[in-house]
Amino acid sequence: MEIKGCRILITGSAKRVGKVIALSLARFGATVILHAFKSGEAATATASEIEALALYRPPVLSGDISLRETWITMKDEIEKYCGGVDVWVHNASVFSETPFFTTTEGQWQHFMDVNLKGAFFGAQVFGEQMKKKGGGKIIAIGDVAGELIWPSYIPYSVSRAGMHALMKGLAQLLAPKVQVNVVAPGPVLLPEGISEAERQKIVKTIPLQRIGKPEDVAKAVRFLIDSDFLTGQVIRVDGGRRRP
Image (tube, helix red, strand yellow):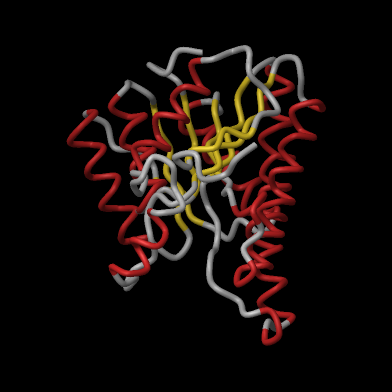
């Protein structure tokens, strides 16, 4: 699929990795649609950057992705704007440390609602649309935590593992016209406030001996849009940290 002229929804695209993906795709000629929930001001700023770069102002959709109604509303708004999507890049998620013995029911449910339930209903809505029109691509931004399962982030890791499994199942369900893949970053953007000692400790676990960049993830997304013979894959962008 050609990126130029492609209609692409990027959820969670106000800042950080999602923003870089959106800017990258716009730079390559895509018609991007932004989404944010609690980062409306940042999303507006990202839209302005894309306008300066690509000479059009992308719409900014808003809503809680854990609700199926949000996905239906976004689909309807996109259809009015450009007729539908060719690619859905699902980047929206929540992330935080949750010590196992003090994790609350509310914290557990929040990870499952946003990271797993949200991806499920998004795929239900946009996957059906793509299947009906005879083609499309779903690219989910996951995490190597879905395979490594970090002890201090178990609810988050479980939600990511579930999302990876969901996308692998969808790759079979939506074939042959719709391709579904996952990009699973490793250390790309470290949490704010991390010490230099902690940073160096992480770097030592990475064979390529550096922290990744958001553009590394954007390149993987572009590759999956370009390629029409890949589906059901988890592409690790982690500098070799996760061994097969």
